[in-house]
Image (tube, rainbow, N blue to C red; front, side):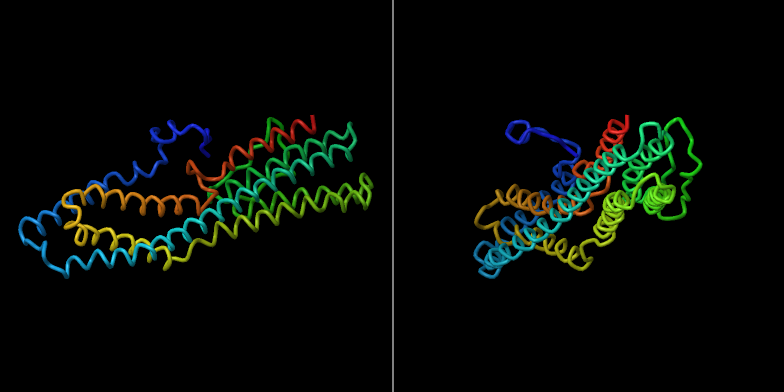
Amino acid sequence: MISYNTKDWLSVLFNFHKADTFRKLFPMMIVISLYSWGVAYIEVEILKLSQNSTVKNVSIMHNLLGFAISMLLVFRTNTAYDRWWEGRKLWGSLTNNSRNLAVKLNAILGVDDNINRNFFRKSIPLYASMLRDHLRSEKTRLALDEIDHPELEIDQSRHLPNQVASLMLKRTHDLYRNKQISGDQLITLNNELASFTDICGACERIKNTPIPYSYSVFIKKFIFIYVITLPIGFVFNLGYLVIPVVVFVFYVLASLELIAEEIEDPFGGDANDVPTEKLSQNIKLHVNEIFS
């Protein structure tokens, strides 16, 4: 995720980073400018349509459709941002619950119980790492520290986060059966253990439920038709100035759609996605500090 100073206007206005929509849309902006010039030249210089009221009425259509397209884009952007913000809140909950579970286990387990302490010290951050890769739909491999733990063998063909959660829950119940923790302590730990699966399910809901295809296609077609008909109606009011005007309108409308596309899947590797990798590293750092 990109970190920046919200009060530094100069760097925001004049700095073009790799995720900037201007870079992505620049080739299409060149095409739109050439198209607008061609329409303006044909209508004004060749066809002499400056007195044609039918063509002028196209501008009235754009005035009517402008409000409709603005409402659609506002809804589109808000819906995408809601998905991004929910994903960020879920990973914030995962961070807090991982810390809480580590704090409780650190207080419950004896200082000399190195086997169980090392197990949870590695398995709690492992869940965040597995969830991150699971949401990115990447094949993952088990990567513990320098010490191997055969009891944490992971089957790559199955649901990875569920396997890690099952291993932690099984170890917790083993502690209860061995009378190393009491029933009250088991109930206390169960809240954090169950929250891991709840967070995973909520993240999967965001990941596996994109914006409806028909809605996304309709907006793109609407923007395309709106932009390519702009120079037809406004060339007589603006002359050749219609070229930069149409390009700017296209840049604004298409940028809003691109931004919405980028943030509606908050668990990818784009610059503005939720920083799941950094959050996973922070969970591992904090859990190690608690158990150390």
